[in-house]
Amino acid sequence: MTVDVVAVVGATGTGKSELGVGLAQALDGEVINADSMQLYRGMDIGTAKLNQVERRGVPHHLLDIWNVDRAANVAEYQKLARAAIAETAARGRLPILVGGSGLYLRAVIDDLQFPGTNPQLRLELQQECDRLGSEALHARLAAIDPAAAAAILPSNARRVIRALEVGLMSGGPFRATLPAPRPVLAALTIGLEVPRAVLNARLADRADAMFERGLVGEVESLEGLAGSPTASRALGYRQVLDFLAGRGDLSQAVADTVTATRKFARRQVSWFRRDKSVRWLDAADPRLLTMTVALAQTAGVRSDRQRPKSPSGQSDD
Picture 1 (cartoon, one colour):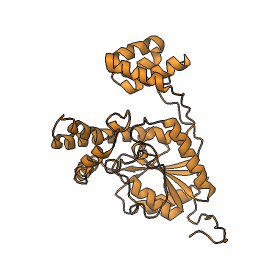
Picture 2 (cartoon, helix red, strand yellow):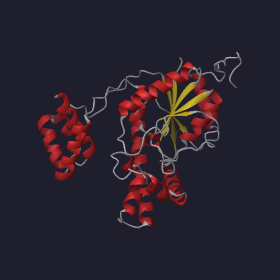
Picture 3 (cartoon, one colour):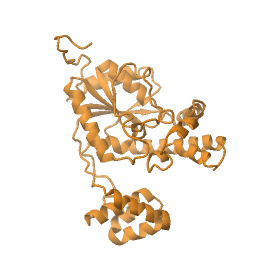
Picture 4 (cartoon, one colour):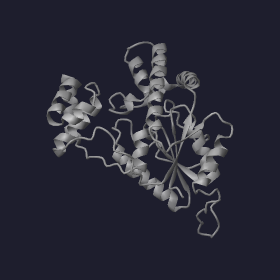
């Protein structure tokens, strides 16, 4: 067996980024970001984006590629990530996908097709939702696509709008649930697990550290963030925006960030637990890197992968 890519997944705060760097150094790899919020330029503190020192010389792809005022686009990410994987592999390096955005990871590894978009129609639907509420749009969705409406909560405005957009564009149904996995890339997927009580404490400490490092100032510096359909909902950023708008004090913003992050972490664990191909490892095990390298080698990844040659004929080390 050989693998095309190694993926490191799990809840936020479990140490995925650090393991990704370690694996890249051990297996001559490069990291491809699979965290949807780390795609945005300037969103560094709240997304725990590794700085240049923390990357330890390992090339990282698909960080800081979008402005904060644009909507996330999984279909575009799919194309960019697959291109980065192909280009990395062509140079003899191991692509290592790192992140906790489950749909983004599946979009890269599995055969997922995404319907097109119509920005003008999306804007009109969003304006209608702002005027009438998501429940009114949900009723409209139920009239044209009952199956999608049955699978989407009326309060989930984003998904209601997307389902209506697809239905009105194509005249066909919106797939409200993901199909069974059909891999297009052979992946070894490593999941990092941390006991819930330990992770909860870690996430509280992390939120405190984010605010101490200047998260409020970072949010204030991001022009267009408040009106962004995607980036404004990021953990920590949404809570700081509320604080800056006068909705609660700073201590409330910190507490709300902790609560929201813990809930998000539980959803991440539930998502990845459904994937039976994930190999779960204890994130606190001091042998974590060694065990992960061994799993990769067993799956067909060599630690002495051939490096590309420079024009002089020497390896580029």
